[in-house]
Length: 378
Image (tube, rainbow, N blue to C red; front, side):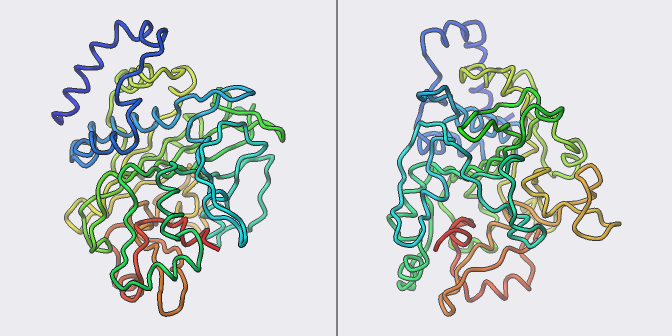
């Protein structure tokens, strides 16, 4: 067990008997209340340890932090849902970016095109009634993008006028991708939900990408971790057991320890305890260049789920036999071509980047794993 996990377990043990009282007087442990940067600096050793239980503990803590309940005029919502959206960060031409925290119930989630659409495997017609994907980010991450001019195409071009320019998001930056679905169905009953003016939405997935350490300059090839990935699913998502069988490193934290972290964070265990992570990822491979690490979600990475015995696009998640893309490898290819003022297209890659991708990236500037710049800058 990682030494930091021993300390966390000891701290948790001290809190078990007093958690109800602690919540009653509004007290929360430091790991919940510290800033995103402070959390990253304090837990980077756990996050980037080869101890999978320690990695899983970080995943659960990040989930609990992101879902701290915030009061609004019409009820409570999770903290991540008050953060700047893609539309806030990357405004339409002539618009103004905003990195403000807005504790209000949105009429409708700020839906974005799913990666399945961006990968050309589905049409762009989205049905708000059936849900979709929403992206938000911590204010500090938003401010970095806006202040550097990386939220517009013209700004990106200007940023890279300096040949030594390098995108390196701030430590503690958090990127969230949520999947909303129709509530009140057999597969969404009991899920966390919120009601906007346009209807109610049930949360069935939460993907977290958190900057824990500086990005290495040779990020296309380096196995030195900088971002921490984890993806949570609602326990009733169809095909979930099969999807998790395709993930390299599954959740390794015992259930009672995970639920205690939620309890310490003051969350409703009956609701948030119905979620759990598919796993974690911190690098391309097992640090050996041979075994590519796979992490995916049954809905948000459905563009990458395939059955090798059936024609692509693949069937339902319960029938998938593999993921042909993964978080770290896919995001590593987010880059900008200064010669043509264009962004890379999203590839399907697992493990270290193949020569075909490296040949493309040789003339591109990396965007610190930030596909939102490539997808959303206008």
